[in-house]
Length: 53
Image (tube, rainbow, N blue to C red; front, side, top):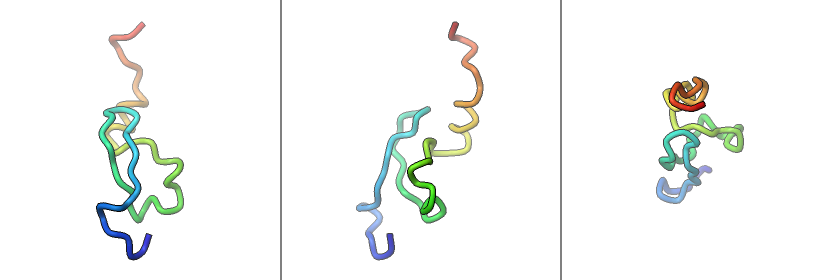
């Protein structure tokens, strides 16, 4: 992604909050596996929802 402007980086929606997040250098090799915009969303997804059932 070298030489790509920030506004042209790929993005996708977070599975928990639905907000779009953009590609980061640290996700370069695992971009297809990244599903959450933050550690907080990843943790929230792992917990079962107490209101469902």
